Image (cartoon, rainbow, N blue to C red):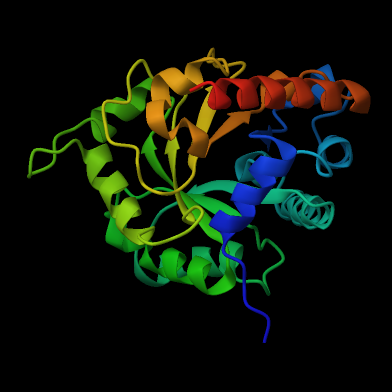
Length: 280
């Protein structure tokens, strides 16, 4: 029986060979319009296929945002399934941005949807929300470990509203985000070269103010349209900047539908991120 290579190891290799960059696939209605596409399933399919064909053979991670597909109902989800399949077939790691979080059998059902290899939505990793308690994520953590997939757990997000929960003080005096990060670190003990339980930490933060050394990847949204730049990575992440997966969506996608322009933009961001991380 062939051993399963854990997500953390596969991600580490992809970042090394393809560059430290995750590109979101976020088919906003406004982006579809900018591409000259209708805001319908046909436009969604054209947008997603063009992005995958332009980038999946060269970008380390592609991150489809599930909500922008779900808004079209079952036909939109069918496009999402095809997007995941084609991106993975071309060599990109697919991170499903679904931010699921629930308890018990419901969390188990989410895990089956995204982390079971028999599911048409099976992805290399999925984003999760831990704010029903980190223990509520156990079905997903176990499913990911069994299939060689990964998870990215919300810790300190790039939206201003997140602070009222994430910066709140837990009963033991730690910021709630630190409690979650410490749980992630415990999941990644002894993993090499990188654990498969990652954290979501916004690159737009003025100061992380927490210990980000979780021995796992750190997904850093906010670069590009939200105002952060690759140069912010070492400032926010410090000594663990080498574990950061910078995430850009509109900053790359606004250059479509021209495939060459999409590739050029992604390559530029990847090089800028590599330079920023290596200089940290």
